[in-house]
Length: 167
Image 1 (cartoon, rainbow, N blue to C red):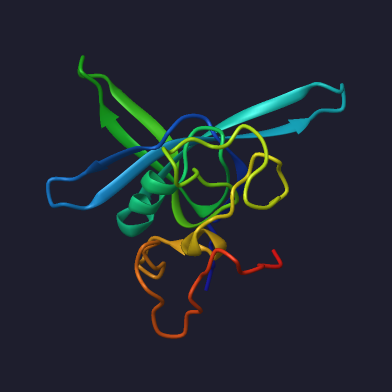
Image 2: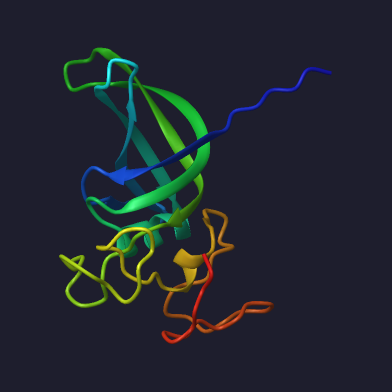
C-alpha cells in the first residue's frame, strides 16, 4: 500500500491582521499571510509569503489573539483550489490549511496593540507578551483548544498570570 504525506510546518510572522469571516452556515474562517525568511549563500535575505486558512475554533482564536507582525508556528497541509474570477477566468490558488498553531507572540490585552518594548516576560523577543492559555499550547482546528476566557477543562491546568512557564 502506498502512503502519502501532506504536511507543512512554518515559523514566521503575520504579514497583516487576520481576516475573520463566517460562512453562510456559521463556520468561522480566518485568512492571513505568514512570511518566512532565509539567508541565501550570496548573503541576501529571501522572504517567502504563505497564504494560510484556519477554520472554526482555530480561526476564532487567530482572529482574536494575533495580528500583523506576530510570530507564529503553523502546522497544516497544502491545498490547491480552483475558482473563477469576476471576468470568468479560471484561477488556482495554493494555501496552507492550518491544523495546529502555536502563538509565539500575541496581541496585548489592552487595546489590541503589541507593546513597543518589554512585555510581561521575554519570550525570545523583547516585544513579546505573555500568551494566554491557548497560546501556550498548540491550538488545533478540531475544537481541542480551550477558549482563552473559559475555565480549565478536564485534564487542563488553569493558567495564571504569575505562573512561570519554562518554554
